[in-house]
Structures are given as structure tokens and as C-alpha cells.
Amino acid sequence: MITRRYRSIFACVLMLGLAIPGAAIADNNGKGCSLLGSWFGVDTLEDKNLTGWMVTATGKSEKRGTNYFEYPNFDPTFFGYFPTAVRLSNSVGTWQRTGGNTFEYSFIGLALDATNQLVGILKTSGEISLSDDCNSETLTATVYLYDPAQGPFTDEPFQVVPFPELYGYRVQLD
Image (cartoon, rainbow, N blue to C red):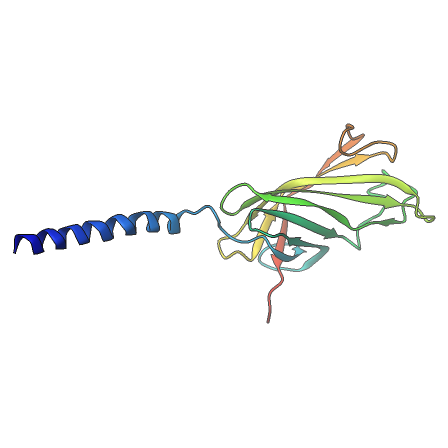
């Protein structure tokens, strides 16, 4: 009788001991929402009217990866800083998770003239915060401008342009 009681108590303690770490891991594993997917810039999170930029975040994990940024309707002269530019390349870069639903990113694009000569370099960096439903994002963005003779990995930019808070919405299947 006593042996059976000890077995029952031991079994309960064992199950509780196994359940507690599992619950702790499930509650706060640091994973959060996935950034992977395609996102479109919107004017507000309520209206979701497109602003013209789009980005695709890829990766082999939920912790870091590559991003591909396009802004086909943006002024290629970048407000006159690159006056001879007629087009901007797509920008490519990287992202990484900094918390449950927060990320940092950076990408680089090129400003080109009519003969496809490099006339400027744009490096953009910022932070992303995903909503609780994982389908919208709030972003910061600062653009660093470089002369073609400068290196965006080693040199100081000739101009730094901070943008106001931006918003994005994830592409979903209908």
C-alpha cells in the first residue's frame, strides 16, 4: 500500500518535472513571428494603401536571412543628391532577429545614369517590429548616401537621410 502511494507520488513529481520545462520553452522560446515572406509598403496599417515599395525576406532559418528590396516608383535622383540618376537598382542585403518579434536589417542599392554608369550608392538600415498577428510591420529606415568612389562598407556617407516611421503588410493567400 505504501509502495503504491510512493509510486503514485513519484510518477506525479516526474510528470510535473517533465511538464514544467516544456511549458517554459513553449511560452518563451524567443522565436516569435516569422519575417520570411513578401511585404508591401502601406501608408497606414488600417488603410493598407500601397506606397510603392516591396521586400522579400528569405532565409534558411527564422533567425537571419537575405532581403530583396524594390521601390520602382521612387525618385532615382534621391531628392537631387544624384542628379544624373535615371534609375535605381533593386537593393539586396541581410536581416537578423533581435528579439521575439523584432529584427534589424540592412541593404544596398545603386543609382545609375542613362548609360548604366554608377552615380551613387544607397545603404539603408533600420529596425522592424512585427504585430502580434504577424501580418503587419512597423519599420525605421535611415539611408546613407555614398559617392561612387566611396565604399559603403568602409567609408563615411556624404549624407544621412532618416525616414519617418514606415509600415508594411505581408502578402497572404486569398
